[in-house]
Length: 372
Image (tube, rainbow, N blue to C red; front, side, top):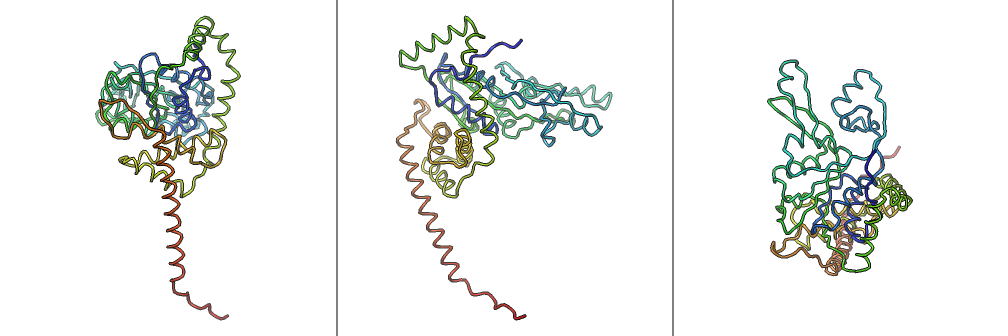
């Protein structure tokens, strides 16, 4: 019997953190969330709650990597071999995996190991799955990610971006799908991540203890009630959990139909340029997060509000600041820059339209049609 997890919808406050997690639930390929905050601010609770909230998975029965039976193009080598041999692949339903990566984990424990001796003796590759295999199509959570060795963090981010774990030893290789929602949490007082690694997390949020005494009292009441009777507490929130789960499922189905305009792209580009953001990852993240938010809100097109919300989550950890100063982000400044980016985008579109019209007028007439 699985241990009951604190309900996501019962988390008090921390709306920005919850929204960042939900956007990754709608678009698991978004690129993960980094949650920064002091101890006891609910970071790990939220990560576990998200995994429990996500809809169950249809998987190939017996597959060690939770392959999706409806996506043969993403199957592992073993499922492909079984299908090629004509074996009918049965389907089963499992809860969304949640894998907690310990700080002491070795690279082999994370990526898995190849039995070289067995391969040399029998000619067969034997792969022992690691944590990445267990996390495929689920949630991979790293607490105190800033204390993890940088090479291992870099490896995890690479795999999360590619969606494939590739292991090679002594000329023998094995690969399997590794698509997961990456959630990292950290206490900034214990050191920060290198800027190169910070940029690899799609979204980042800063969480702090709530200052409203009523909200703090509400947190205590709910946690005490959950500790005393987890099942009874969950029963009180079941309807809200199921409603939010259904909303995520609907948003995932709607996401491919959410569209954007050329003006939206120019607005996003103008916004990131105004903040001096290096590279183009932030632009793509803002666009994907805006589309995910529109899908979550039941809309088929993104709005300036979607772009604004996405920028709040995608830009703070990518803007250069004093490393000794706390990370801050002026929302009024962001709103002003967004309006400027929108005005600039409209001007650029007008100029492009005028240039296209002038080119059409200057174009020489085509040859006269031949008489029949």
